[in-house]
Structures are given as C-alpha cells and as structure tokens.
Amino acid sequence: MNQGLTYLFLAYTVIWIAIFFYLLSLSRKISTLRKEIDSLKK
Amino acid sequence: MLGGITFLLMIVSLYLVFVYAPTEELMGNVQRIFYFHVPLAWVAFLAFFVVFLGSIFYLLKKEQREEQFKWDILASSSAEIGVVFSTLVLITGSIWGKVAWNTWWTWDPRLTTTLVLWLLYVAYLILRSYIPEYSNRARFAAVYGIIAFIDVPIVWVSIRWWRTIHPVVFSAKKMTIEPEMFYVLIVCLLTFTLIYFYLLKERINIEKMRNELMKLKEGK
Image 1 (tube, each protein chain N blue to C red):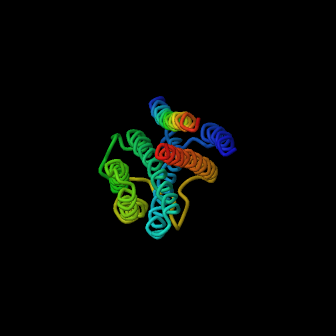
Image 2 (cartoon, each protein chain N blue to C red; image 1 turned 90 degrees about the vertical axis):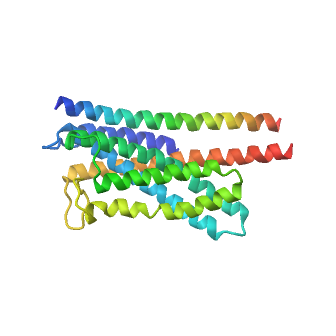
Image 3 (tube, helix red, strand yellow; image 1 turned 180 degrees about the vertical axis):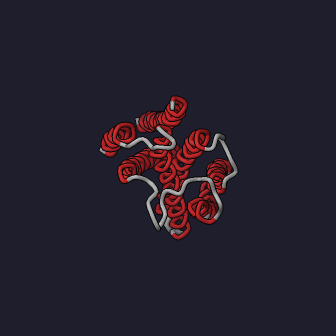
C-alpha cells in the first residue's frame, strides 16, 4: 500500500511540476515580448 | 476569468480524486493516477485534433494571408500543448505500469502507438523550427499536421483491435468502473479541457505578440 502511495505521489508531482513550469515559461515569454513591444512603441 | 474558473475546478477535482473517489480494491490508492492520466490523454488527442483542423483550414484559405496566419498560429500552439500533455501521459502511464505490470515500459500496442504519436508531434515542432521561411514552414507543417493525425484514431482503437494488457475503461457494451469513479473522471476531464483552452489562449497571445513585434521592427 505504501509503495502505491509513493508512486501516486510521484505521478501527481510530475504532473504539477510540468504544468507549473510550462505556465511559467509562457508567462516569461509574454512579459519579455511585452517589454520589447513597449520599448519599440516609445 | 478562464484562469480563475480552471483553478477552482482543479481544487474541486483534487478533492474528488483524493477524498470522494472510492479506493479501488485491487490496485489501492495508486489507481487514483487514472483520474489525471485519462484527462491528460484526452487533452493530447483534443490538441492534435485542433492541429489537424488548423492545418486543413490553413490549406483551404489559400488567398487570405491573414486568415491563413490565424489557422497556422492555432495549429502550432495546439501542437506544443499536445506534446506537453502527451509527454505527461507517457510518464504517468509508465508510473502506473510499474505498479500494475511491474515494469516501467512494455511494447504493448497502446503504449507503442502513443509513443509514436509523441514522436510524430515532437518531429512536427522540430520541423517548424528548421524551416526559416514563414510560408514554406506553415505549408509543410499543415500537410504534416494532417498526416500525423492518422495516429490518433489508431491509438484509440489499439486496445480494441489488438491483444493488449492496457485496461479498456470505455466500451460500447459496459462501463468498467464504479459510478462514483465515473463522476470524478468527468469532472477531471472538464478541468483538463479548461486547462487546455487556458494554455492555448496564452500560447496564441505569444504568437500574436511575436507578429506585432516583427511588424514593429520592420516598420522601424
């Protein structure tokens, strides 16, 4: 049972870490692009 | 708005998965991987279907550059999300397999066709990054996006056509899970579908901003 819980924890951790880092990479790209666009518009 | 609703639904999903859903008799708690594994696979299929649609419309709108551009953005954005989710399908499936089959990987038809699907769309993204000229890149990607989609129905029917050790949850004759488990799965499917649309919206924004930046640079 405990071994099952370890694998369950592992699976959900992988999912959350992957989604978190993907979201983080998207928001970083958006903020970088916004800064570049704003600087060119000035 | 969409982000907030998705976040709330994710909290509800987690409650349902870990508190409401009954523990499966044979596998115990590790069976709960199923509630996220299936929606991850559904989102990957949905994402690749959107690539397929975007690719068809790109090729159909030959004379309308702006329209073509929109469909190409949709296809490429959806492909990236599809690859992220299909990667997670392979990883969570592998973890589940370690407990259920005592191995991280086996060349079962469902696993093999899913791996092929993942490779096809990784190749789609690599192909896009290797062709510098925009219209060539978009045209090749559109043709590739249509052909690659052939593997999606093959993944779906693989556990019905061939002998497999992968469980069949949905069949025309009967449901193989308890009603409570089915309700939890439906909520998780809805949650992950919303996550997909949220990510797609953000990813499309990036492409629009890149286009705006390119136009600003050309104008200077």
